[in-house]
Amino acid sequence: MDLHRHSLAGTLRGLAHIVDSVAFSPDGRTVAAASRGGVVLLWDAHTHRQLTLPLEAHAGSVYSVAFSPNGRTLAAASADGTVQLWDVNSHSLLGELNNHAGAIASLAFSPDGRSLATGDIGGTVVL
Image 1 (spheres, rainbow, N blue to C red):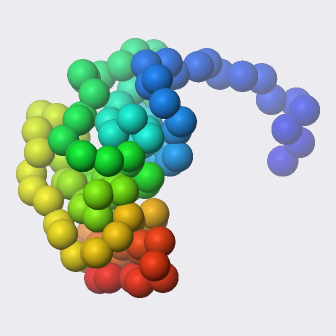
Image 2 (tube, rainbow, N blue to C red):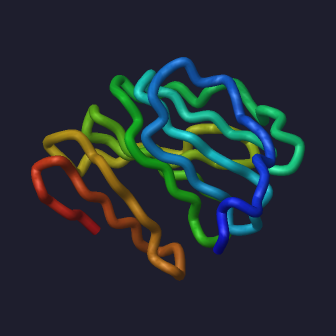
Image 3 (cartoon, helix red, strand yellow):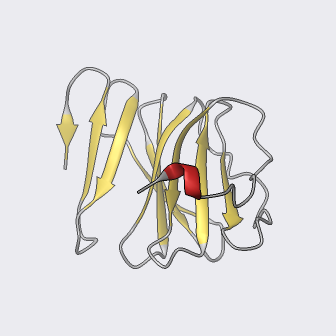
C-alpha cells in the first residue's frame, strides 16, 4: 500500500488523554478508542459522530479494546486488572471479569466469539 496516495478521512475527537488502543467493529461502522483517562468512546466510522457519552466504569486507564466477532459486545481492558464487557447497541455494562492481579494490556476474542484472551503486564495470558 502506498500511503502517500491516500488522504486523511477525518479526525475523531472527544478524548482528553492518551489513546492506547483503537478498534473497528467487524462491520466497519463503529470505531472504539481506549483512553488513559479511564474511558472508552465510540464513533460512527462514516460520519465521525460520537455515538455515546464516554463509557466510564473503569477505575484506571483503559489499555485495550476489542469487538466480539458479531460486533455486539465490546471488551475493554484496564490498568485496574479488570475487563469490562459492554453492549455496543445500548452502551450498557454487561459484566466485568477479574482474572488478573495487574494491569491488562491486551485482549482479543476468538474467531467464534466464545472465548476472550487477555494479557497482563506481568506476562500472564488468561483465557
